[in-house]
Image 1 (tube, rainbow, N blue to C red):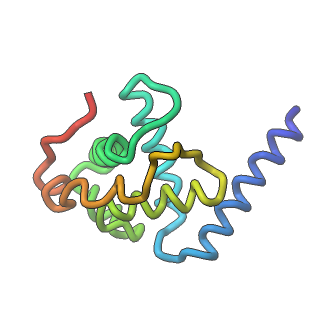
Image 2 (image 1 turned 30 degrees about the vertical axis):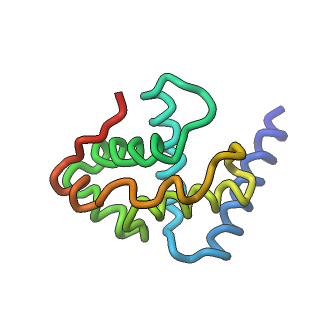
Amino acid sequence: MAENKNKQSMSKVFALLKILDKDKRYDPEAYSFIMASLDYTMRKLKRKGHVSGEELSIGVKDYCLEQFGPMARVVLEKWGIKSTNDFGEIVFNLINSGLLGKTDEDRKEDFHNRYDFKEAFDKGCKYSLH
């Protein structure tokens, strides 16, 4: 059983390495953070399974502010993330590699301009998960 778990972990590592080799825009930490933000968002929404692009965008913001406070935008930009559009790029890289699933309705555009980074991270944002 432990051997099977190790194979699954290695498979995920190789999938991520393929993404990083193909798309060099984002730091590896960006992918890890988006995955952690997805878990955070599902916990906040008390839901297992599908999360919309809008919900994840808000969850990423909330989680980032919780983790990094006033340095949140600086950290995201260091990883190559400059707008919510980048969340969509990362999520769809993960989907295309098989690391995440999606519904037929999910589109990269679901992440398009959800909020302004300066507004959300420098001044706080009115949108929050409940």
